[in-house]
Picture (cartoon, rainbow, N blue to C red):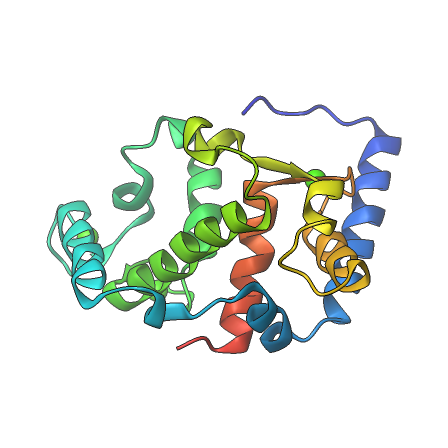
Length: 191
Ligand SMILES: [Ca+2]
Ligand SMILES: [Ca+2]
Ligand SMILES: [Ca+2]
């Protein structure tokens, strides 16, 4: 991802639209949104899938201290090469107790939320062949989201979209979607 240089006016506009998205988020009940999206949390996965997440955790825990440092968590990712701040921000989203490391439980919880969120993203717009698009390019136009058969009416769908579209550009990228989805899933206390 190339850094996007912002003019002072552009930066102010981004802050204002993020505030608007945050306000839209405040008006929605996380439990209602998760129900609407059909999120089931751990129940959406078989025990062997959850065990598989644990096996991935063990492979990433190179010094075998039972937790993942930012380096262990994203060390293999070129995206964060030379970007320690980015790696720290990335781990913070999953670091429930804020100790700067991921425990097995925190990692598994994050995989459950993220993997189900991505599956639901493909259901919202089922006309796109998502498997043929690399996940880092996944994005959805407002019309496709709001018009999805998943939602009972366009008012609710529009409110969810506004809360998730953090930069207010009427296109929902996968990272934008995952950030707000993750907050709602945790607030709803999905099993
Ligand atoms: Ca470790
Ligand atoms: Ca932690
Ligand atoms: Ca956007």
